Amino acid sequence: MTPVLQATGLVKRYGKVTALAGADLELLPGEILAVIGDNGAGKSSLIKALSGAVIPDEGSIFVDGAEVSFSSPLDARRAGIETVHQSLAVSPSLDIAANLFLGRERRRPGVLGSVFRMLDRAGMRDEARRQLDALGIMTIQNPGQAVETLSGGQRQAVAVARAAAFGSRVVIMDEPTAALGVRESRAVLDLILQVREKGLPVILISHNMPHVFEVADRIHIQRLGRRKAVVDPKSVSMSDAVAIMTGAMEPPGV
Ligand SMILES: Nc1ncnc2c1ncn2[C@@H]1O[C@H](COP(=O)(O)OP(=O)(O)O)[C@@H](O)[C@H]1O
Ligand SMILES: [Mg+2]
Image 1 (cartoon, rainbow, N blue to C red):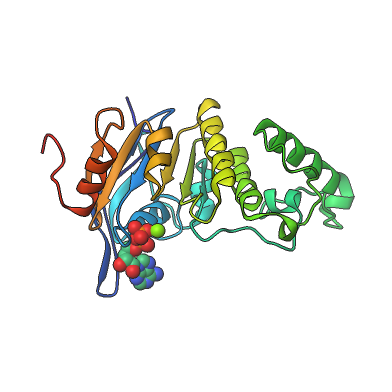
Image 2 (image 1 turned 90 degrees about the vertical axis):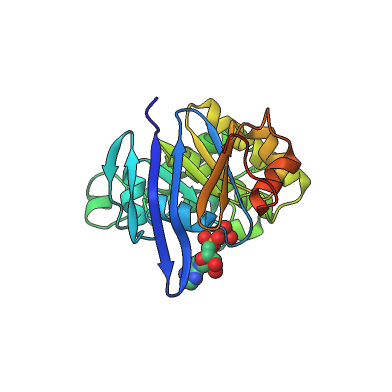
């Protein structure tokens, strides 16, 4: 099976710090791949390289088997890869619909859009409503509501909805539930499962082992800038996964 997204031998150095030391990753069609690892293991750096937010010093990235070279997040988006970064990128003063379309606003048809650059707000709101409904975000009543009036979980839901709506190949989420309460986390986990149901593979970075073990098809364990192992959550216990992550245990079969 050709991976939808693959990285081989990624190296990323920040001065004297080596964030990625020859990291590999494979995301298979239709799967939720969890990425776990201690703080500083290079999870965010890996995701940034895959989403065009940083350019690796060495290594290769492949989309559907073809090598790509992303020089910006826009390149990755054009390849169908949507990312929710760890530092949440929503604009609090804009409304939900405007956030969903941030960076790809729709203009009004004809002269109003082409000459006067008028935004198609009604069209964007309708589309936002459809996307939020499709993802079952029932708690958001009105896409015209300002994001600053939403709870943390609802904001996260907007970011996840945006990724799910525009990702045509891969959705990547870096710690999407880290700042959330129990119920809000639940909603985001359900969204992730719905993204998989749509047929889109997901990379989920998380520290939360119960979440990881609940939703992941496979678990990539990142340690000291490299992929240390990939394990099956059905055959490895949470405590063993954590032991591999911290270096207390060698992965099975190595
Ligand atoms: N922009 C940066 N400048 C300098 N060092 C960085 C930068 N980004 C990450 N690092 C360092 O790279 C290492 C890996 O970081 P990161 O990829 O954020 O790990 P993780 O997400 O697994 O916690 C850490 O030691 C971190 O301090
Ligand atoms: Mg991180």
